[in-house]
Every structure is written in C-alpha cells, then in structure tokens.
Image (cartoon, rainbow, N blue to C red):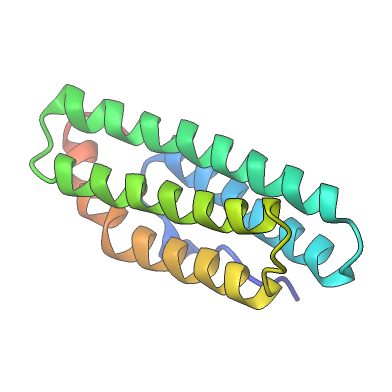
Length: 135
Ligand SMILES: [Fe+2]
C-alpha cells in the first residue's frame, strides 16, 4: 500500500490542480521507496530537487489564477506555499552538508503538509474558481 493515497476527498474541483496534486502524491511515494532503501543518496537528492521544482510550478499556477481572479485569500495562501518551499529547502540543505535526515521526518512533513494544505487551504478556492469557470 502506498504511503499516501490520493482519494476523492482531496479533490479541489479544478482538474488541472487535482492532476498536479496527484503527481505530488506520486513523487512523495517514490521518494519514500528510494529513501527506505537507504543507499541511493544521489537519487534521494535528485528527487527532493525535482519535488521542489514541481511544487514551485504548481504553486505558481494556483497563485496565477488567484491573482488573476482577485481571490481574497491569495496572500495568505501564497505565504503557505513560500513557507513550504523554505522548509523543504531546509531539509535539502541539511542533507547536502551530510546530515542524515531521518526518512520518516521528511516524509511525515511532506505528507502532513500536503494533506493539511489541500484539505484546509486549497479547498477554500474551489467554489471561487468554479464560479470563475475554472473546473
Ligand atoms: Fe495551494
């Protein structure tokens, strides 16, 4: 069973963003598999790098629509995104200086953050975006 399973309760009712979120879920699961083997440190570093890249692209996409349509929660939402990237960069830095990051610590952070962010923050824009014709 996957570490994190996407299910319909995670849907934000905007297809593009659901696809992005599913991809992020996959990336977290793939990262877990490689981290748990405990040998491929370069592979783990690459995957964390790719996750930061992909999450950034996804966040910019959400932010672009929030800005374009004048969503009231835009700034607070963007701040959550920025904080996430900072935190993952913090993990990345610790790993790059040779500190052993316990897989559970990083994976739990990613999983908990994503679930909480989708359910608590992203879903706040669903109705708003649907009302603007985005679905
Ligand atoms: Fe978001």
